Length: 482
Image 1 (cartoon, rainbow, N blue to C red):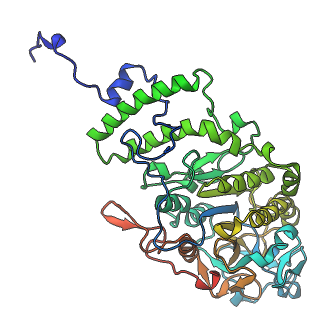
Image 2 (image 1 turned 180 degrees about the vertical axis):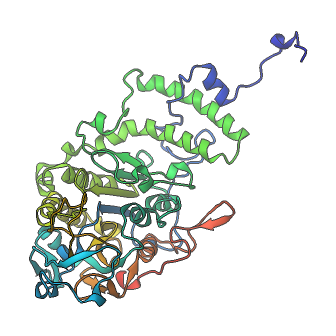
Image 3 (image 1 turned 90 degrees about the vertical axis):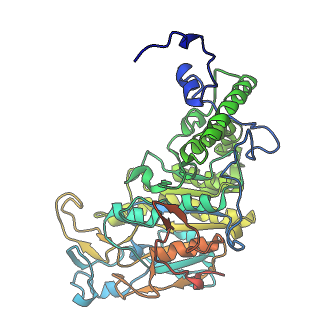
């Protein structure tokens, strides 16, 4: 090719955003854009339409916010919220074969080492493991007939969080913010608090998948107490706000020009939003995550420890308009107790019972429970029989329970839920759901209904078809709704 001798003398046209960043050594790449401190922060700033602005659902919503407390690993329903006195009759004996429905070989009947008693006006029975939660039993709808597809953590986590056990699909929190946006534009709309790092399947549990990346959950490692470790890079120690403002204005113009040349670029729009949000969070996130602002009597009510702290933070977040908060419990030692279940379940419940009980009371006292849906449960339950000794899982011990997806318990409270009821039942031993069975798809359909959505109409077109959280399944459990 013949070189053009006049090339260097031509005027250079407008640089694209990518070219500008490349030529400036990426020096501006981590800066936000947008008029953060304007009265209309989050509105159409510099030509950018914020996808997280509040949106109207299909019909009036009963719940505006969700707090999902995920008991990671699969808590035992027969030791928490589904008493099975028949197990005592068969203690140490093999149960009738027709009641055994499990892919894994298990041993003899294993009665719960915990006592149950009735609570509240409803008289619902709950284990001694959760006395503080049980004080609010009349607010709870206890579902004793949940079931999933397989007895393995990975696919069951994906099913519970994303509605699909194998295919990559958006999480429940992502669908929620996609449908509703969020009320506070200075904080993420979907936050996943998981102390000590990531659970099994890591960030896939709160992924946005094919939804725009703006709806991805924001992970917070609540093991940390110092704000700048809890929220990494929350402060810019090199530039004052005024200098950041000038750079933001410039980058805003460049981003807007780049966006206009590439309409519909979802990845670009998500990046723009993440820069914008990161800047805004400097002003509000530090305060929202700092529980030292709470009165001492409130902090005492929630108790000590990482789960108490993150549960109190969850209340502070929904109070400030965050749409979906997921709390992971079971860091380091999950509820996956193949052995020493009495010791381990007691320890795990002791870490969270007081805080969850406080959350329910605190939300109610503040008038937030009616609009906040609180969900508790894991990816499946556990067998009512003892797990046979084997290598690895239970170290040869005979005092734990194996995975059980055929039947398990969850509960919901607030946000339009009709409390003080038990819905569904497992068989007399607790192996499988037999009455008013609720699949995970049914649970998701019901949650979306409480948020104001027809789950068959909350869809997103991808790869030539309309996808939804419940795929082609799911029925709203109307008996759970007040």
